Length: 182
Image (cartoon, rainbow, N blue to C red; front, side):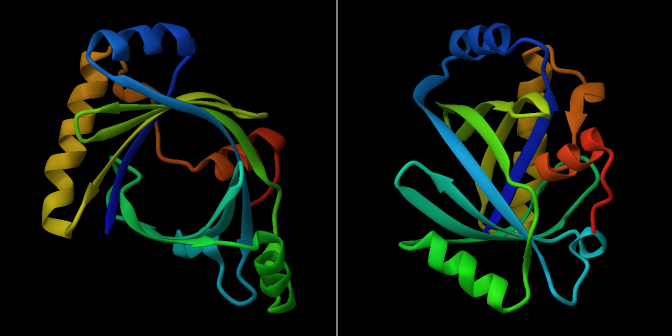
């Protein structure tokens, strides 16, 4: 599955929330997410543009592998996820296999549905405020039309190209803290 995702900086989450609701977005829920990413023991994920993380969200935990980004306009990439019952034990297994945990990314995420899009309004600790729009594409051939649909929707809401962000929240955290990503 290809996750088609575009993220943009926003100054005021409440203003963008009013715009998306006026456009028909339906509020789903607000969640707190804590994402623990890991460095690979032999591959440099900063160079391969991959990621592996454990996401904790309430009583639910998910292990996610993200492949390299597919283009320069979006954060679209292959994504493989599996729900895990014991995230602490998986964390321990990864550490024993020489994966190295890096600083966790914490955010409050307000989720909305708009047709076949998931719209997230994110307040990311130590990073800032963002809107993310995601869609799923079953194949590479189908991701570009969905990417263009998301870009059009952002433009409708007054979010310009200069606000788009391809860096992950982890990368943005490293940049804000003046750290080097390995």
